[in-house]
Length: 491
Image (cartoon, rainbow, N blue to C red; front, side, top):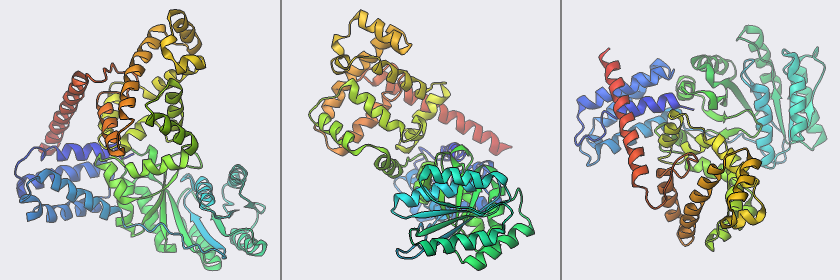
């Protein structure tokens, strides 16, 4: 997500990198390029203009112009303004124990509303709530069945009535049932959608809002529709007074214009974002973390939270203990790979680690497929016997041939993996006595050497050539981006 904005801002800010002194003139030239990159990412025109005006007012002040590190100060100003643009956000849903809370979900057809109802139910389940899903979208024939299937997957009850029923009555009856039974404390209403906004839809939603009086009204928008999502949010908010927006399909939106425009145009905060089709792919929207991602600073907090949710605590504790003792085997390596895969794609994880986003892009530019390479490595390790995984030095020529045949690879790849693992094992043993901060630094050093690129030729401990190649490629891309930006400005 946000690849378009990130690349555009990097190109624009490269004008100022290395400058010992910033002036009002070169700041405004850079901001012209920033504005262009925002517009190309489908950010609302007025939002882009206002954003650049605010940055300019702060940046041309003494805070940046008189700074010893003007570029870093300028990036700090952009970072703060991005946070202000997208926030603040209150993630609370005003739910209270002992009472039945009601959340009304609305949105156009195709926005992912019904699936988002299920995602929200799963999130609330994880927080100890007992949700009930109400199928009140009677416009789309499959919506009731879809919600029923989602409910079965989650173990969440679903209240349904025949498609000929009145949607307002369905919502009223669902809430009444929840209050009567006493085993539900949150009701999620999946209300009607349309292919477009019309008076009939709005009147129906207003009636549900008046009769049921939900605690929260959330609008589900498809981020990939860009400014159409922003415009629909504006209309829905005028009719219903929304409490928040859920942006879906943000993982597939390279531009990110909707995320940067919704709060400013409507005044309604983005509370949650959908980052995948699975029911656990709903995240709280944090403007500060998103601003860091946009500027290529990573998002360690979100990565840490994901790790807490998906990692097996006992298994990780056992591996930490082995690492502390300086032991690290191929079995441990495979287990860690399997844990990491739960967090998402390799490239998405890399972008959350400060300084690693560019390495991920370089791998993509080189048509490298780390997911496929990691799959091959896992197949190779799984084709070994337990003794071979614990003591790889016993793997001779005949064993290599057998492992290659079992994993569908070549013996030369087995050789390469064993060689690189031996070097990595030494580094992991060296890390055994380090503090958490020193381990992070070591991991960053390993990444700069290509350790997280399974297809790279890596020589641990002799990293000058690998590091030089990465630095060379980085500078080459920066020059190329700056040149393209200068051409745009001349036009």
